[in-house]
Length: 240
Image (cartoon, rainbow, N blue to C red; front, side, top):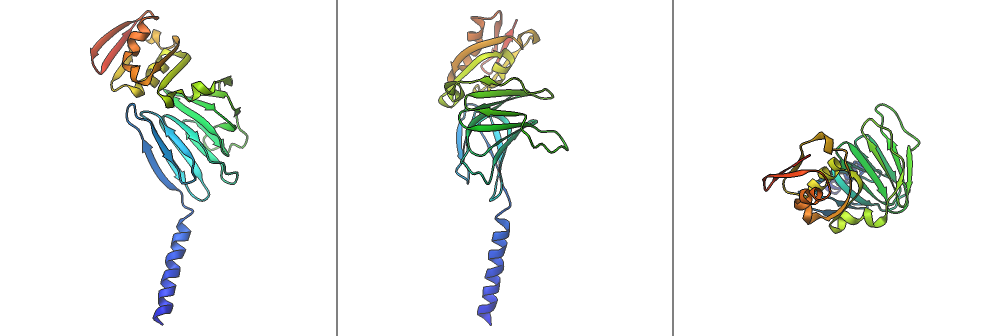
């Protein structure tokens, strides 16, 4: 009968929809220079994506995972004990049940900082299954890992520092000049170049607004032995 055939077709269609519902949906997000964007995932987790950053998300009924390709992101993860949330960046994997935390990728280093809760941090090793975390972070703690190096010691981070960039402020405490130029450069529609390798590892502590990054070279020249050479509006050289 026609109605039986129609029922069978409808049943097959529903079956196909259900069978595909568990496949992760991959979505890519990115921001431009100086842009900050908030993303709400299907599980109600929120991601605040920093300037000039890229992520890829994979969400399904069974999976919640993100790849941080470049830049910085703050994650406010919806709690789900049955479905842990993970973020991969470089050779680092971060896993949480539900907690707010921040991840920043500067040059070859990954910075993980926790606002609340517990975050497990693993080193991803090719063809090796990792079960125990290398580092367990709790509220007010951060850790840094560079490529091909061990995790650095866990240090303290204030909640005001952790959330500052989302409010338009960049705070650097005893950070190498090369890292500051690379990170702050995400908020500058141009390029700041260190012309001397001797300047790379100079440690700097400073605070500036994201709309002041174009003035960063002059601010640095006030306290460091360097010379600023403006080639154009979008190209500034820092010399020793």
